[in-house]
Length: 68
Image (cartoon, rainbow, N blue to C red):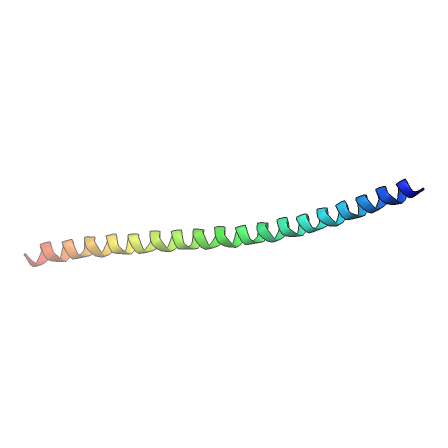
């Protein structure tokens, strides 16, 4: 019977470890999603700014040619 209690104790400890690892995995998954979303937003912002710069350069060249 003692061996049975010992094995149950080991199983209980392992269950706790599994739950802790599942919680940590869930936390890291949410953290990764936040980083990914932030990275994507920054990428979109850079692309939008680059397009705006390109448009302004084109407009500048156009106005420069008109005034020449």
